[in-house]
Amino acid sequence: MPATEPVSRDLASPSRHPYRGFLLRAGLGIAIVGLLLWWYDPRPIFALLLRERPTYFIATVAVYVLGQVMSAFRWQLMAGLVHVRGPFSEFLAYYFAGMFTNLFIPGLVGGDALRSLYLGRRHNRLGEAVASVIADRGLGVIALFWFAAAVALFANHSIISPAVTVPTILLGAAAFLLYALGPIVARMIHRAPRGVRRAAGLLVPYLNRPMATLPAIVLSLILQASLVVGQWLLALGLGLDISLAVFMLCVPIANAFASLPVTLNGLGMREAAYLVLFSMAGVGREDAIALGLLWFAATMLGGLTGAIAFVSTQLPKSATAASAPAARL
Image (cartoon, rainbow, N blue to C red; front, side, top):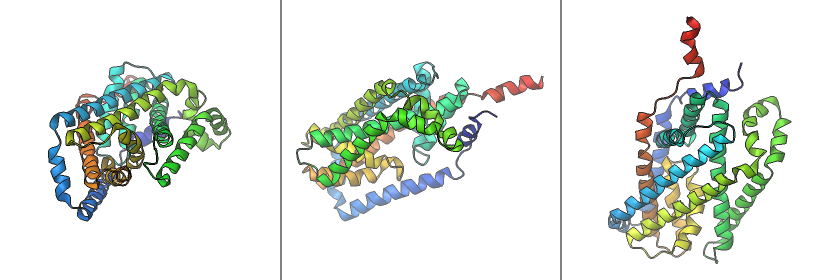
């Protein structure tokens, strides 16, 4: 029996109650936002939202979508390291289909499973496809921690409390240590029990060659910078006088909180993090909440662009299914 068959069954089996999870996440996010609006006067927040200039909002959506295109290219690089190669248009279509799916399936698992399944079936290498998606996601998180730690260490200037910056720096250091010790972790996996070795062994090619993943790390850092610029554009559209340096400091830390698969696309988590972090930087509370809501709207609209790929991209047939008619003949 192929080693990747259990992975195939897991990915091919949809969640029994995907929309229950979706409704729970959406409800929790709306509840957090509702609590913030109840605690603070919502009228100035709504007035701020209406002040956003459409050109700046559209520019933010464009920056976000271009960042996702960059992420698709990063995934193509990661897949190439395990010898799964194809045209960029293929990776772009699969990535955007997964991005659209992430809007409606709990956490990031739904979209990641979908693009793993698309790529794995297309090349008949499901294990390597799953590994490429996990490595792509993991390197993105590592780059986020590095970016946040770097700005907390070198660009803080006592703006953000040490209660926030010190854990951020420690997380960045831990992420760097994990990245640097990849070959040692790979050897530990080879000595692990069979079940662990079978699951984690897919990542060994990446752990053994950390230097080969540096281009993906660089792309991830550029992506984090683009997310900062996108949210700075929203502030310009509102007419707020907030420096780009403040966004460089606050946004990556807030993104770390918003990336937790607790609410729909980080709704509520991001606004709460913005409220705390931007308030430390002297930004008004209503301004911080409005920025969070506008960014949520921009990412949702950007994610909906993946509907085109989701509808137009056909799920490739598995090699087993394709060979079944020939076997019967």
